[in-house]
Image (cartoon, helix red, strand yellow):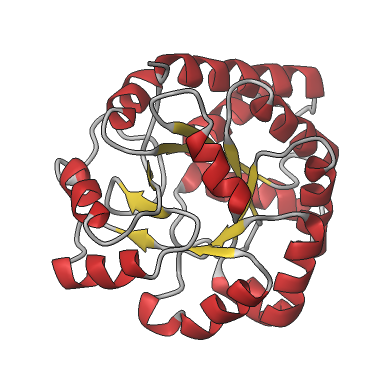
Length: 269
């Protein structure tokens, strides 16, 4: 968890840049090199998406990434293997992103034990309701893994207080209703949501869901501690793969690295 807080404090920008990529998309080695590329191009933390067959919170772009990974027979333990490989070369924050079913099927104790051993710092579980999160949060705490909570534009004040006051790592502020995917415009309530959450926690607050490019990242960085970008990165992976789906690792790493650098540059003081 300390690496997460360090990433926010030492990002050298208005806010930390947090890219999301799907582990194993399109192959294990390609995804590993893409994570390394964004980390060396301005990312301060990364979200390591664990592919899942029924990703309820994800839009078509990230769904397609999960499908490509699963078709390549990517399994959950390989997410820990990828995390461990990244940890060998970076002290930046590594955050897993998984739905609750894979965690339960793997068993929470084994999941968090392997996460700790791999060098992961936190986990985001978008379909774990706050009211049902205590047991998972306690086990995550036992292994030093931050269970990062989410608040949304529809969260009432009491719910924001309850969620933010139990935050570990950082608070994930959802900027748009519905599933993930690039948006031309984000909810008008996002900045207000960030300000309300600050009343109840000292943890950093990062904004994600729908961030599509440098201009939005710059705007969000003016009032938040972090900017999370997922679908816009995955779309560049799709474009680099092309219609044939041929994996050219150099093209993939160049595409995501260049975009990370563009976002990071937009967020400097």
